[in-house]
Amino acid sequence: MPLNIPILLTWLRVAMIPLVVGVYYLPEAWMPMPMKNVTAATFFIVAAVTDWLDGFLARRWNQTSAFGAFLDPVADKLMVTAALLSLLALGRVADLIALVIIGREITISALREWMAQIGASRSVAVNFLGKLKTMVQMIAIPLLLFHDSLFGFDASVLGGWMIYVAAVLTLWSMFYYMKLAWPQIRERASVVSGARTQK
Image (cartoon, rainbow, N blue to C red; front, side, top):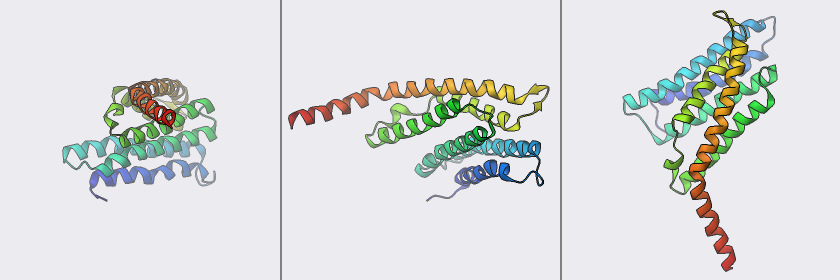
């Protein structure tokens, strides 16, 4: 396993996931809810910054690797899933929204793994739509975690609207990737069907 600063930053992002979740399990006497919200939002923002920074440094220093390319999206999905489950437990995000976003991540991860196995991973490479979806999520989630007034705006209301936008972009990007992969899926399905017919 290669070990360099970009990969260490990615591991740091993974290590911060239990901090975002765990802060809400602290007793109120130790940390009141407003402070928990600020702390969780701060941890999430720091983790989100490492998401950008590790990729930037890997390209800048020519330290890209197959392991880093695998670990980075896994860390992102774990971070978003953990935060959404916390928000779900706190009643700050709807069940359906959490299901759509988490379900999409699982579906597209499985699709990309299958496409990589058949040598067609370029067909479902990350594009602008996927990046836009991620950006909206990375803004909406800390706003929902913060759950207070921010520069005169109600962070929970703004975050609530943005997480709905993120859910729409999530579905849109999922159908877009599925459309790109459909020729390969149909081709493999016809080959399997033909083989069964010959038997």
